Image (cartoon, rainbow, N blue to C red; front, side, top):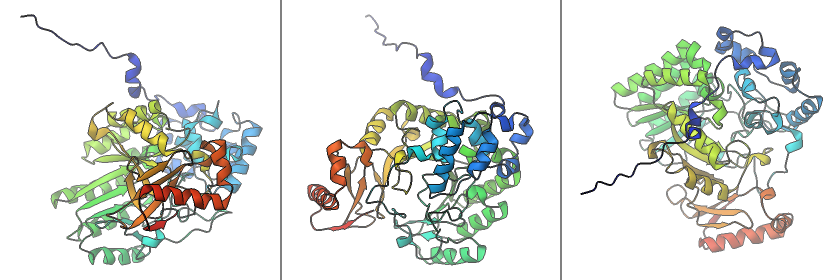
Length: 457
């Protein structure tokens, strides 16, 4: 009997691109950092102190590589941005200053007036209606068994696309921020609410960003929540590893605090994990790998939640590279969100069709537990829905209709594609308010939600 073997051909070299991360003292390519040694650059306090917070500081940092035209563009962009600006030296050093306009890191943190698009006419500042689901300051209770605790309003960087631009960071020329629970005394009210609701088993601690919590407050919050008998799971959310990974390496007290909460949780049979936020493959460097290895060695399980952003990760190949790069350093790709409908960043959003196409491509390229679920956080407070689970999707006019029967039954929720990605005829229809109402009503009718209540962004 002849034995038949089916041997796959060797994998091509490009299949291993995810292992090729930036090495060496790459920050020295930025003139302002050319004399900064490794020990200084890895100091989290130096990173915080030298973060760029204005167009003027940006110019001072990149004055030898930044053209006058780019500076003027950024200055005008800062003036109209709904988010305050803070960009770490680490993030600045990852930007390709030979082509900053198209750089995926720049797009996330440095606004350019030249790329501005008008907001979608159905957009609101708090598109997810988090304030409507807040029983006490700093707490969002939308899902039956889960709550979102927001104990601070600051971050190591301010993302332009932040869904909480209504509250995060200082006031800007365009937005007066809503107050969150920012002191231990205010936190007590949230702890009391959680303790009185036995259905709450899962608490996400976000903000703001838990990277900015002092170690004593990491332990205070973690232990207070672990002390509540019915709380089974805690998630500390932070973008820190993507934009300032050196904090894990050089802020021993913060890492010890997280570790102590994780260890205590394990001893009492409760899950405590870290959720982070990488969007671009370029955010992963040798520094990132070192930091994430330290978390892994301490038994701190880490998941990632990305946002699908135009010009950052909205192609099949770039998303696949990001997912593989995350898996290579033991970070589980968990979610990829549709870009929320946020003021002032319309040029960063993309379409539902793009998301479903990328998800099909990524699925099967690595293990299922390392493959993210693509979701739409339904505007109006519908919560996370699998992006392809819409009741109806009008591709021509860019209207997706979602239902959330376990979250807010009897309601329909709408997500709108960016208008500039639609056909010229569809763009013309969106100019006329009466036509907008007709298109929406028709989409809801096709979705089969009948006379159910409609929730708009």
